[in-house]
Image 1 (cartoon, rainbow, N blue to C red):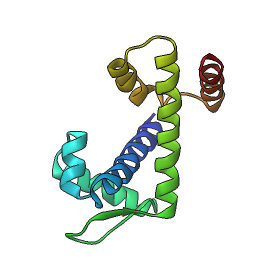
Image 2: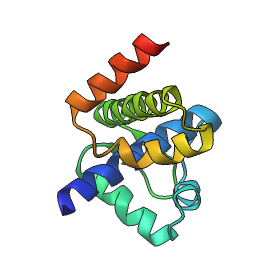
Image 3: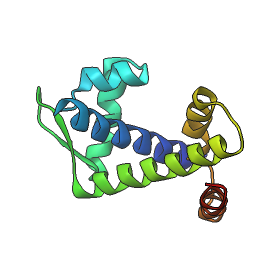
Image 4: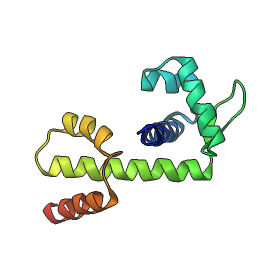
Length: 125
């Protein structure tokens, strides 16, 4: 369970870092903490773990950047999120609920389930 939570956290953080870089050109620790709703210290600890895992690079008082591996993790998380979101929308879930639910479901679905969600969404679209 603890490993699953770490993976989920790493995916959420890398995805957010990538989104911040795309939107504003940089990802800063304060922005991460604010978007996720944690303290600056908590975000700093997670970023340190992500650095040790080879997912991000950061220098003191500088922006945070994804490594190639971090970009792959963020892209995979984004893709899973989209598959779940699209499936939920296809079965009639409203947009706000689908967005909120996809955020949790995306981390707990097997690839088999995601493949079925994707196939069903393509068939209904």
